[in-house]
Image: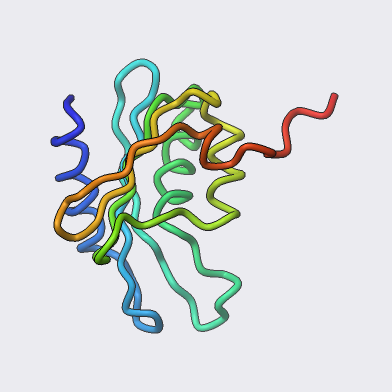
Length: 129
């Protein structure tokens, strides 16, 4: 699956976002190391701390299906510039992706910024055992 296909899936995922408070839809697509695809959107709650971001929704869907070796993530926001994940999403990404895993951030005009998980969160918490 090409990055353009993944971007289109992320755009589509953003269309199901539940965002009655922020009106800020996000769509995300995760590709596993074995090629499975999982999508996610942000899901808000009146108690804002209970809101879940699109990135974490996609990651948690993959993990809940038994896939913990994730390879690539695409994050789309209906924004003027490519959208950046929040700190919580960055840390969750660091848990399930390798530091060199590809991250594509996408704006509404489909312009992109491409980086790695390690570049996105250089000083992440890691396995402390």
